[in-house]
Image (cartoon, rainbow, N blue to C red; front, side):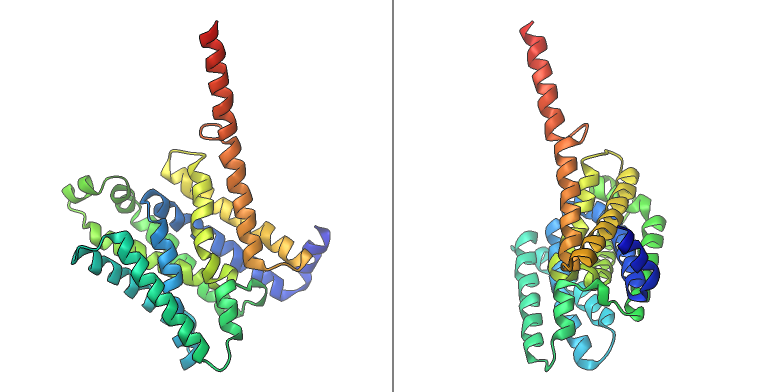
Length: 287
């Protein structure tokens, strides 16, 4: 641990990696909380894969991958909604069709490029090689996401728990939905350097799912999910640096370990405590 702390103070690339990972952990936890409540985990997976064509195009034209990734992510989200609302195809089927086709298109584009080194890092993440421009893009996205969620918290809360009542109050559920999809796309883009496209859905879902097992209040869940995201990022980066492991995969495995602890030992929903309470009830009934 001391070697890791000394390295942080000594190496600028590690400082950027740590800072970027923490920001990503926070915003993934915040947006992931709404994704969990809305039962939209599959949409998170879809958006994370659908940004690949935009990333490939951005590298081909020499522009920041943020622009292309956000564009294709939002277009995919709109396309999924359009197909499901204007045909007999249900939402989960539309997601499966569009996200796989977008991901396949991205792979084809990658194979057509002369160099795919950077794109490989986009697929699997390499936070230790994060550039200053990428770090500031991540910070900018983080600020936009947090400010937007704070400004529209009541609308997001109401539409997440009861869309019918939200509509009765005059809220436009579709607009709130697409706002959330835009934020989801931006968070996905911010996470590319840290965990990559393949693993970004894990950082969106796992910390939020861990928090969901520990509380029934959305505000508390958001803070817990952000905290678990930060812990996963810091501990994962430590193991990645110390043992020369893939950074994205290591961060995700730490998040998974935290989820397993909550799944087993959560006071209210944990498997172990449920078993203890059930045994106590059987003993009381047998008396």
